[in-house]
Every structure is written in C-alpha cells, then in structure tokens.
Length: 453
Image (cartoon, rainbow, N blue to C red; front, side, top):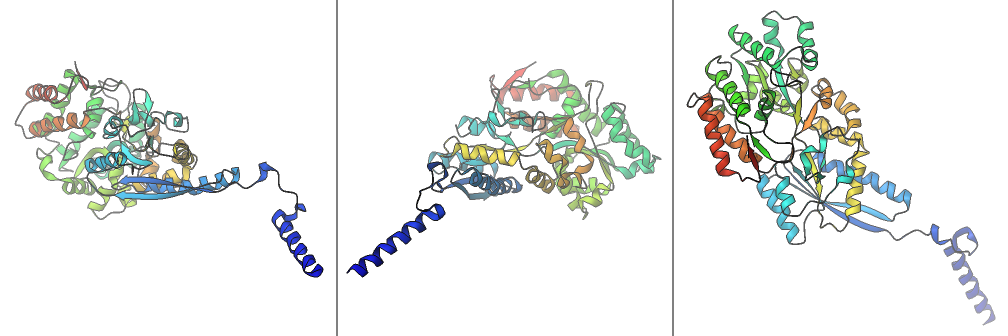
C-alpha cells in the first residue's frame, strides 16, 4: 500500500508541474492568462460585379485577426459571404427584409443611388468616426445624410472625357501637342468651348463619323455636362434643384450637337452600348464622356486589351468653361455600410479601419475595376500607378468631388433623358424641353426633394 500511495503522489505532482509549465507550480499572473477565444462570424452581402470590395474586407479580416492575437483580445473573425447578381431593387429588398427577419447582413455594399432606401429603413449605422484625412477630399460626399456618414467609400470612379488620338494626328497635331492636351485642360488654358470646337473640326474634316457621343440610356453622366455649362442639379444640402437657366443651356447644347453642328448622332438612344463602345474604341467617334472604368467595356468591344486602348485613347478633366471657373470631375463611389442590428459593431468598424490601413487591398480593388481609390495611399500603389488606364488619370483625384446622396435623383435623371432623346431626334426644342422637364419634376417629386429656381 505504501508503495502504491508513493506512485500515486508522484503522478499527481507530475501532472501539477505539467499544468503550471516551467514556473515550478506557480500559476501565471492574471494579466498573462490566455483569454478564451471567441469566434465572431460577420455576414457580408454584396451585389453585382466588383467582388474585390467584399474580398478586400475578408482579406483585411485576416490582418485584423493577427492584430487581435497580438493584442490578446481572444477574438477570431470569420465570414459568411453572400454575393448576388440580381436587380439592385431586389437586392435592396433582400437586405431590408432579411434584417426584419433577424438574419440581416452585418456589412453590405451600396451606392449613392440606393443609400436613402437603406437609411429610411433604419439599416445603416452612423460611421462618421471613420472619416479621416486618409481619404481623398470629398470621397465621403456620396454617403453623407444630414451631415453624418453612413457608408465608407471603397473607390473613386471618376467620370471624364475620353478622346481618340488618331483624329488629331490626321488633322495635323503633333505627338507633343496631343500629349500636352490633358495639362492644358488642367491649367485652364484649353476650355470646354475649345474642346467642342475641336469636336466640330475633326467631324468637318471627315476624319471621324461623329465628334461626340454619350451613353445610350439615362444616367448621371449628363449631369457632368450640365455642371460644366454652369447649371446645377442640387443645392449642396441634400436637395435636388431645377435651375431653369442652366437646364435650358444644357438642352440647347444637346439639341445643337445632334441637329445643328451634327457632331452627335440623333438616335443614340436606339444604338445601344455595343455600337457606342465600338465607335469609341475604333476611333469612329472622337470624344465620349463617362466613367473611366468603362474603358474595359470599350476595349472589349473592339477586341483590345486596356493597354492597347490606352495607346489611342486619352482622358481629360471636364474643362473650365465660359460658365464654370475651374476644370473638374465627379466620382460616384461604391461603399459599404454597417447594419445597426449587428451584434458586433466594434468588430465591423475595426474591419473597415483595417481596410483603410491596407492600401494594397484598396489598390487591388481599384486596379481590378479600373477606378482610382478613395484612400490617398492606395493611389500610390503599383496596382494603380502601373495600370495602363489609371496611371494617366491619378492626378484627377485632386479634382474629384463626390456625387451627393439625393432622394429622387433617379427620377430626375430619367426625366432628363426623356427630353434628351426628344431633342436629339428633333421632336422638340430647348424651350419646350425645359418646360416639360420642369412639369414632370413637379409632378413626380415632392417639395422635400426638389427646389425650383
């Protein structure tokens, strides 16, 4: 029995020493105890293309886990991803309905056109604390409601003027003169009126079929020209504006291009994207205005790589004009919002902070979709500076302003485009179009949404 008891005591001592490590049986102080690990699952919902946005968050999560481990937080972040390819209205409903059923996303993708639907449904958390000088000035503009930020911008997709180099060569421009054009626009030396005269010149010379084209359907691209011509479509405080002088001038511009100078085809609405993109890509059209990221579609339409397209297409700021003192561009970013119903708001905020601290991930997204980044440091990363399209437009980030979040903007642009179609076909005139546009806005928007001037 004594021998058996001795063996048992020896085993107990050995187990105690093993449990205490090399501290000779002295337990570690409380501050050095390893906390229990909690697994936090973050549900991300995303729609359509640009999956590099949620992928950036997932990859930032790996870095956040490393930071949490180093800080001894005892939290491990995992993800439940829901990537969809459906109509945006259906996606919007999915986010809102899933939240009401208790199964909503923690973080989800959105843009300025649908932010109010989410805001009004109460599924967006105030994330104003994320607004820092790490971002390009104005990048958050698209997600500001009542002076507070409700989503974080992930890119800076500027809309610019494309122009083909070859028509300029054919009318006698040297390579140095062509290459100098973006700087001349930036400095204000070359104006919008100068550019439109150039569109007429190359068309009259017969070196292109058309001097200028635009998107076939409704969209916000037209607002860039409206502002270049001195018009305005919002008051800077969250409301749409109908400003008669500017609208009338814009409608005159549209009408004249299709019916007087004939630098634009009258039936662009019927042409479709493929026809317009290929005309721009081949050089049958001299100029086009729209998002820089659309270069990928232009290139594909003529079986070119973006690098091959960049050899013949150059990008310009919207120049200063007789009605606007400075050149500029507008950006309409994609963003991510946090659901206030999330059980892990601090983890969600930390994830977005980690994305901002990871310019390589932001640049990877920008380079993949041919967009500048909302984060300054990302625009200095190789994915952007070595991108054949973006390397020539990085400077535009200094001139970019965000497109504001506005209730009723889709109605505004849809009604605007109806008049554009009629004007280009010669079925109405600028005065009638201005009057009809005003009447339609008055009938379809409330006084809370629009101001008439």
